[in-house]
Image (cartoon, rainbow, N blue to C red; front, side, top):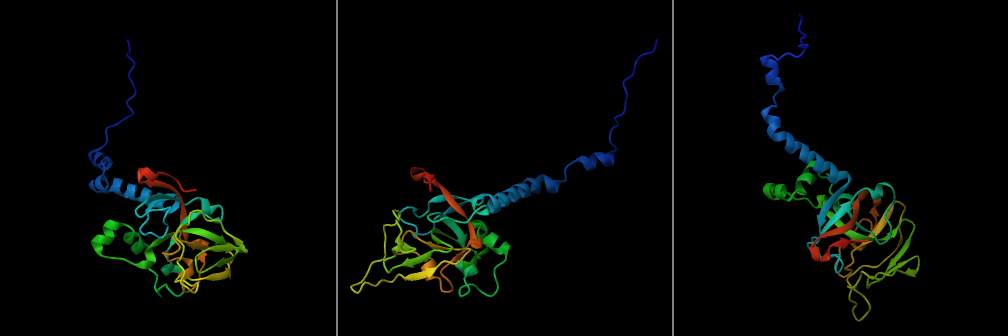
Length: 234
């Protein structure tokens, strides 16, 4: 009587094959780190990132050290709108009278934007910074800003409930804040800080007062720190 035998198609790997199947020590350690860094960089570059408020230029709505979520998908579909809070590249990287002849590399800016590396290597570059302001006027708008910092769009007073700190006027009706009376070119926006008396924004850029839309990094949509002011920025 014959007994049925199970097929024996699987063979044990040869010693040299077995060693090849084992993960290399380099990838054991660096693989997860490289993957994590790649995912972080990809998400940060194309989807969303966290930013903090370093100055008082957006007071009173945004406080110093507030943490915000910046999303980067909306402006791939449309242009910015009036009233939206945007994060954009430093004027030192695009203003013709501020930028240096040699722009910093992406690698340098990536290191500068990681506080640990920037502190460790002692590197900094104003062209690698990012700014946060509010869109006040868009392409085609005729914008007028008086010495106090009050804005008129197409000769109509713009209602700005988020502005409390206007520029103080002297006895002659003048201030240290610059006036503006121009038409916003297509593909550009005009951005101002909510703290009109203390914000280095479009009014003060020497080359052009207008921000190219291509220099905008994303739109601030949510404050996640501190918890006491948690909420949407719409």
